[in-house]
Image (tube, rainbow, N blue to C red; front, side, top):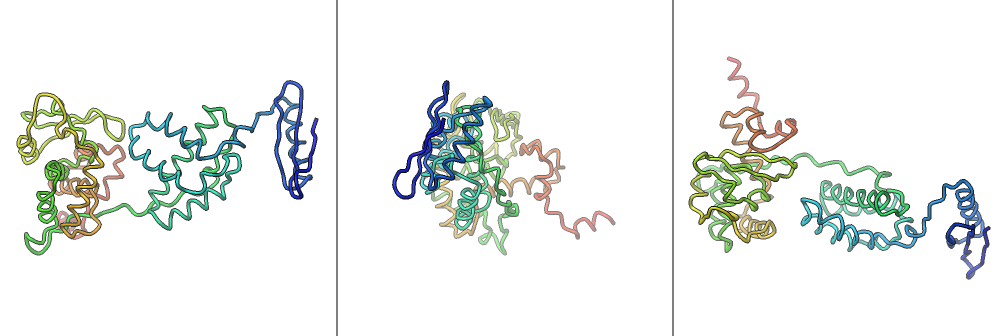
Length: 333
């Protein structure tokens, strides 16, 4: 049975009572909307298809995000960067909305505002977190809520970066020379070997930071990575230069190659070095791109490079080859 009560000049409260069901209450601006909602709830109850929306209508996105941060994020491999993203999300006004009231238009507005400040890839990763949050809330936490992220178009990925180190007109102008010189001046003593190894091995920053001596065989010139970004282990061959870099470091049978070092510390030290070297738009991940390109320049084929870099999709490697028409023409002679 539904009852309606006027609360102030612009509010109508609807209540639906049915034996065996919890009391359902909701407030609307007009009596017509209140009656419409009540009829829909009564039909669902009569058909045995009613699912309480009370929790979705009283829980804010902020509360869900905090729960997700406590229960779901710590289980992920990328827990640290995801934590930073969620903390940033928690500063956005959209999190004050109750989740039942968040529509696709709200998510689209959030997307468009974010695109004014950050890259499309960043916004897409934020939206992926929000989408997973709504799915977890619906499937695992029993909160009857629609996933509004599914109702919008994801940002289009920007063109893949192809930033390489400029050779310059002379040795002093080479960007690699300037970068390594700035790394030598860094307070962090691990920055220089980390950057040099990145250029020699094409390993990701996280893979380098988490290296352990027990996984390195300097005689066989290999590094074993038991846990990588794509979820699979791989072995990386070491160049003579890479072996020399590792031999120059204090080491033991076990333990980390760079004890106490964090990805955040590398990020800060690297950013400072890039500024000192007066290099424009050179990210740490660009070193992986540079190293991968050099592997192709040494004559390795695409399968050999994929084995080293860990790329599962060979299409991702095509942009690293930088094949020029004149070079191909010489091969056709």
